[in-house]
Length: 53
Image (cartoon, rainbow, N blue to C red; front, top):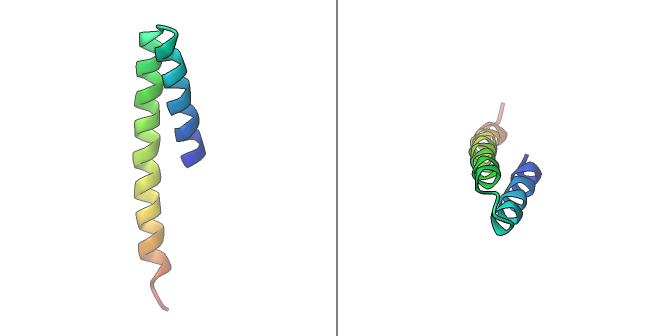
């Protein structure tokens, strides 16, 4: 999931350079959402991974 975030950030940067503001804003917002989903899943996996049964 972090890989997709990086791809959308790069896409947003390239679209911003070429003047496609709408596409850049959309790609940046998708990257932001994916990053926060990744962050939540990472924290959940840290919490559940430390549990000893």
